[in-house]
Image (cartoon, rainbow, N blue to C red; front, top):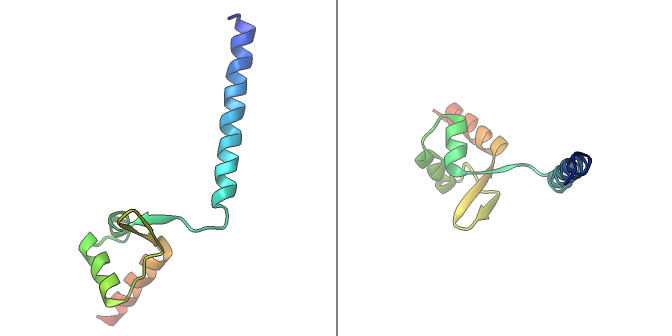
Length: 88
């Protein structure tokens, strides 16, 4: 393969990656990002058991599932954390 051919192939690959990213961005545009419970717990600074307890008590509702894992909107997790902090 000549240098010119290799350059063209590299450019085509880069263009394809950019198009793939744009497609992925369009698919998730306007939809909130869902994160699993342990990551949500880490983001608000509590134990994963606390997230499970908030769900059990009705302070937080899962927004989806991935297999057996519950997924949450980060803004919902922060709202539950604020609500439980005020209740103390």
